[in-house]
Length: 252
Image (cartoon, rainbow, N blue to C red):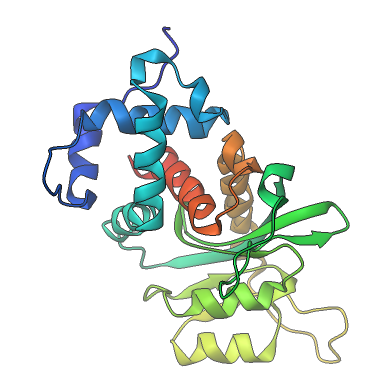
């Protein structure tokens, strides 16, 4: 098949530092297995439908499952993003990702955080909260159930904010505590005020127009079918699918 995806030698060299050490028997061809994992995630296929060129589908799935649970793919995205070192501004926003029935079936295990799937007007969803740089490239991700407030994601992402000058966000993030938290970090807020505010909030309207870049980022991530539709029951595995898409689209 001429439309198969293959990582280049240069791309493999950038990803290699994030690979876990092999214990015992050496792993099979890294390039073939990772290329197959990317192909499956981008096209939203079942693992058993993987093209034969990528080898046994059980090998692809076991590698994907094992590395996802270890957070390898998430570390790839964070590590590659950190190499660029954003200094000017970042943007924050959230988007809904539709959950397939295979992700919502069966009860979640006790003692965990649950599936992070909630019911909204659009059905069963997971919400993706993201921070991106001034060029619209993702640098940090966080997922919650669909009905969870944007403020929850904002609190979680505050800890990992880089040392920048500006934060761009829509009026959904207009909260006094959020503005104060940004101020404590030395970050200026470019956030329009809610209509309920008695005293209008001033913001840089020209700079705010650049916020469309994070909307474009969400659109490009959702071009990957395994991101646009959540098939995975485990939230950590689903977050790995999103992180892998970000790596391939923006950081390789």
